[in-house]
Image 1 (cartoon, chains in turn green, cyan):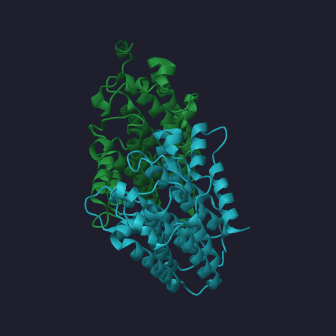
Image 2 (cartoon, rainbow over the protein chains, first blue to last red; image 1 turned 90 degrees about the vertical axis):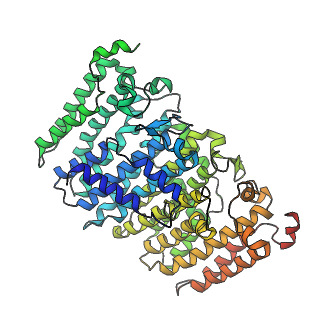
Image 3 (cartoon, rainbow over the protein chains, first blue to last red; image 1 turned 180 degrees about the vertical axis):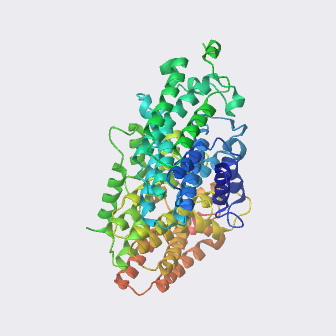
Length: 293
Length: 293
């Protein structure tokens, strides 16, 4: 089974937990709307790539980790799109959850997806239940108010913001969690994988900032120009467009250099290259800068 | 140390995780506002009472369970108070989180408290890490979209609602989680404790519905008449006022009958009685019904 099929199957199984006669039907529909159809699934893909490099010795627990990070990512998108933040009408080319189902259900969908992420991990069959504590803790911190997604979003509401801290919390934390959880599930030292994931996460954030300037709305399935509109810190505003492209290349190199000796190292380097390329806006030449004042 | 001191200390330690230079300062203030000063702390009190009855052999893990259920309870209050649900201005006699800090931070506070609940459990020192899976699963389900808090709140947005299912999800789930998590932490069979907690949870919900009709706003620290205003299912609307009081008495009996043989059984029965009494509105005589059309 290829990674995408594995991820979509695992996500469908997760969403089916507690579905049926017992669950409020509109909530079920809204949860499904938040998770399908697939976006890039970059975080669970990273989890599976790390697991493969670590022998993939606990596949059910790895699947649970991959699903959990994607559910938390989807939760953060649903809440970030709310009128009190981005007030976004579209996401992945569809109506955002609050536009389709109302604000109340959108708040509940985010909460429900976070809870489901932990439930999926706790339910995963594993020969190594002693690994659960570290996995749960990593996921919780990647969402949390200290250095996680919640902190990242909250930095947008502060007057003084370090762009590095903002990006590490808002994007890096969940990338790092994906890699650390997968390595931990397989019983490997997570330290090197955290560094690999931190570089990929930052590259992803810089690419996202570029796409916000350069990409057509069709590429992202969401409106462009949001960073300027919401006066958010942006790598492009700090580095310029050419500087942002150079930063992505440097980060690709950092990720490769941080890779530990492992099975399929060559495959992983190829995968990294493909991920970074796919991140870049469709028209990625700095010449497009002319369109941007 | 008495139970209240133990709970407040554990909550303060939990909130301090990740505080300091690294966390967005307004978010920290909003998190604190959501958890302090103490409300009734009924759920963590229940967790500690069950733990005592089960020998309290894992006090750090029990504290984590007690804290986790209270943090999730506080999260649900913050989100339920949002303009897209109850649009409440006051809670525990203070401004609600969104009134004091804005809607965006209120959404993030709820998310952050849920994540923190799981972090606290995952960090708890324990000689029995194999118990974590069941504890995390119980907590996740008590919040979740199947039968948890999220499902309960979502039932308010459906056309057809079973009041039993609504109350079990909205209130019962977290009471049951408090008892089940505490018993599990101590290595005891959680089954009987789930039944005890289900009865207490339902009594609590009926008392809350009574207070919504009979209580002065000062008793609750929140506005009364919310069930009618929001056309919510209510035990008082189903049973009438006298019926609701009778139901609370019956549930107290059910809770006592479900108590397993355990250390300090007599103490626990006394505690149950005190809890139920404290739940009732200040002026608890059915004669007050005259004020209610």
